[in-house]
Image (cartoon, rainbow over all chains, first blue to last red; front, side, top):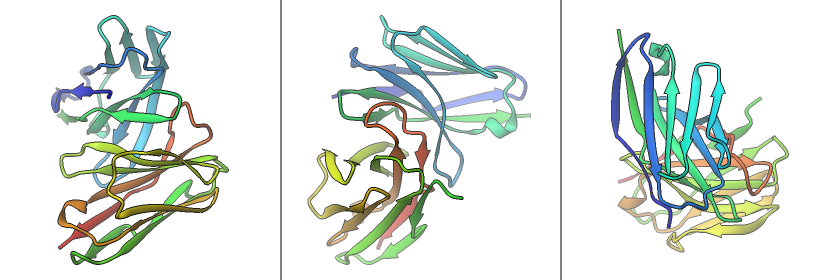
Length: 111
Length: 113
């Protein structure tokens, strides 16, 4: 089955850029997503990229996809304290909508 | 208006009991899901229904039985609860069986004592 890995923790200073990385194993993945989970809350879809794209930008968010290395990253520009949360990458594979989530990266934003 | 709602938000119960979690979506979506998030925040799909039909059933113990009375509801019934069932359960919906799952419910935190 699909394995999706992320580093567990990232700490950045307010105003800096954050880069959260994700690796996956199934090269037939079609869509790749980033979700945000704030404490005690559900998951919020931030952005997603189709597998035939290399990059997608959406305001402060930039998603980069390296299909050859099966590596996905999320860059948050000008990180704010409100960005503190757990960020999950998720990969869609197969004809049924089986979404495999990464282990989650806890982003801590310090002043 | 809440897009995907779950009840209850918190559920504390004894081992061996039977409990249900309800999920409703008002988005007109065809596909609904149940995900389990354990204490380490790992999220795994349990079930997926499309138009009331089961399309994904991961290796979940048969003590867990989803029920979809109509397209807008997907309830989760759990028999003979065990300590290891303690987790946060998220319901979700999407318009298609492929593509992003945009809407997750707020989660139900189940604690089995």
